[in-house]
Length: 214
Image (spheres, one colour):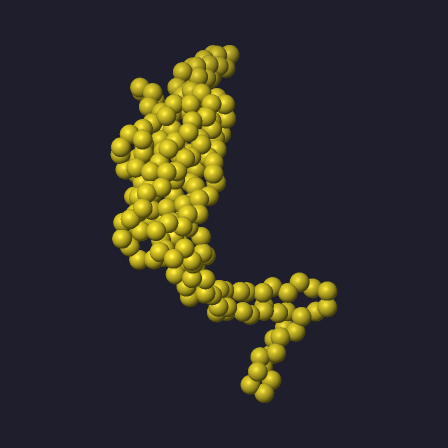
């Protein structure tokens, strides 16, 4: 009986300790959008253009930070990615007079704000330049004595600026790779022969090279 009572007391102490050490977790719903979802602009060098982005918050109240970042196309996948090294002749100025970063904006649930931006170009090569308008949630301050992991939700709107004096774009492309991955293949008289069963799908690998400036 003595041993049973000791085990019961130890179990009760362990349970109380676990409850006291439990760290509460806090979460907030992030649901917001930016319009337009893409900007494609043709402009002459040394010109200014006014742009507007509409930010709407559908989730919990948050503070958002608008900013611009350079982009660069992925040479293999063709998608745009953030770049810290790309240098371009285009600058973006917010209403606060600062370049690339605007003032933090607090939005309640279902509240929207219009963010004006001035785009300015200087002399540069006539081609495409890539950017992102980013709207990201400002991280909340850490609670004293608590350890937490935080994510920074953000939305990136691709902004493609084409510098041109004529208003035209140079669209030149060619198919660099075109091949079929067949079920069976063999070489006959120096030529590769591929066979595909009737009714089966034919996977085609296609790569396109851009030979123009846009």
